[in-house]
Image (cartoon, rainbow, N blue to C red; front, side, top):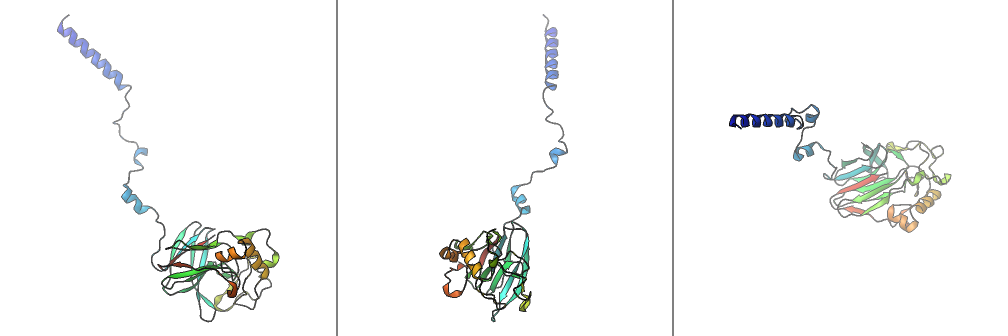
Length: 255
């Protein structure tokens, strides 16, 4: 067998193998399609710049969380004559938290909406901030107050004003309880599912509602436990502890 014949046979075999491989190996070197180039890789260090950041204490103020439906919240300044003046309102989407700045030394309350009765969170931003959840002027749902420095908290998450077994006498009745608005722009609610004052209305001559007081205390575990969660009734028998934050920043959640 001549060498030239062997060479031509070998070449023919190699060409046949290359042809077979070309039909089975995918075209890995082909140009990328539009779909493959629509989501470019971004380094994590740059991607984080475009992601939402959790709200944090940025000075004196409140980390305000809305765990209910989107709504507005109002901050009211306490006046020396036992009246109060609205400081500001903020709207927070459901599930969001927002830092609300306050002046050092400010004392007042924050609540859902602008009307009374309502669940109050009382705040005193005096270096070491302190405060409590108050149901003295009624209850329109759950709220908690937490320290941002020592882990202490108080309040409750249940919207106890929406239960089916509430006595009718425990509710604030907008049809029979006085003028709609009073001094300093303070107005009463037109809602019919708000539990009435437990200490007497400071804005009008209305006595404490015993049915509301008794119902709230029962819902929050009895008098001893309830008074660990919120300020209820008059000062002379209240044992509610104060929540404190050494950085003058508190965390408030409404449900």
